[in-house]
Length: 435
Image (cartoon, rainbow, N blue to C red; front, top):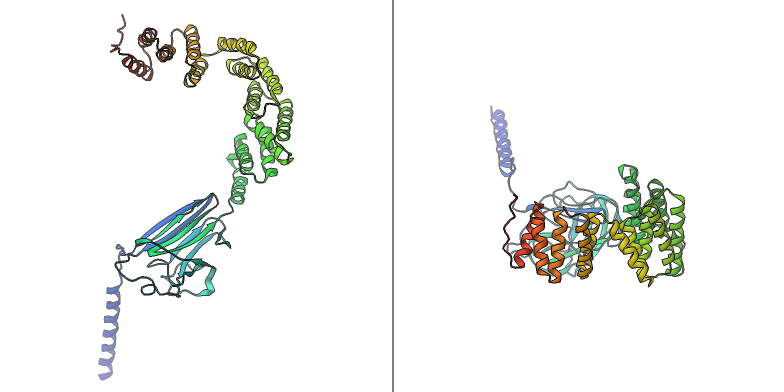
């Protein structure tokens, strides 16, 4: 009987202890005092993400007291603080593989602290930390900082290839630099993407080639991509890209030599591939826009070829501009008049506004007048002409043009503009009623 009572009493104690433990552990999801937070930063194509909990200072003495010096600290609260990298990176110059790591810090009163990246990511804080699971340790300099009541991770000093991740709490900051080999990651990504839908059109190959050109890296690969783009669909954009990369590969001694290679390469591609007037026009326009003007004759020859294939306002106006640059004013003016005569409604309207916004209002009005003569039933051309006259100070002609536009049932935006400018001219215009 005595043994039975003893056994019963022990069972009671065990049940009481179990209930006490359960009473101290939440079995439901409730808010935590140190709330969870996530912060991230993209470096090139590399995603860096920190997940942590944010304790408050609450007037406590942090460093050397709540957080001991020279001991491993969880760098947050509650669960492991986690940091993840979508690609390989370097931390303070030391390589670290892509992945997710438990983040710990060993604070030092002298400022010579350590940051630990642990392969263990499921621990509660740093209590079960062991150095055997370290993926990387780096030494850093902790610094003083403005007061942060809540523990915070932030990213600063951001560049195209790096960022500084810093833990700040109380009045201390623990920064460490994260660097990504952006170009290697971009090239690897481009190669993968070009095996999918991005590689089905010329544009994907051209964009990849332009990345190499603009960032001055791996010209050989860039040229291969540009060549593929031109082979698929030759056009001004990829022909120019290919020519520029060809020149870079040959390492010319100066800008003139580089331009000579570009022109020779474009000329070869124009002769080799099935191109139209747009490609001759576009490549000529590219030459005109260059600082050095040693290839004006070549640009003129390509413009003549473009006009021969399909004369239109666009290529003829470019020729007029080139002739003016070559001090052939009389010929330039003749070509300009021929171009305006060939212009479509939208071409004339757009060209007129180009002149208008460059301050060449009189010339703009001449173009608007030519457009009205060719397209007298379009209310938009009368509205444009009205704006030109108003800018010139020819008030009555402007009023007449706007009234003409409003009498033709214009689109809402055209109507609103005509009424607006009329009011600026002092005319409270009422819409013309149709008979």
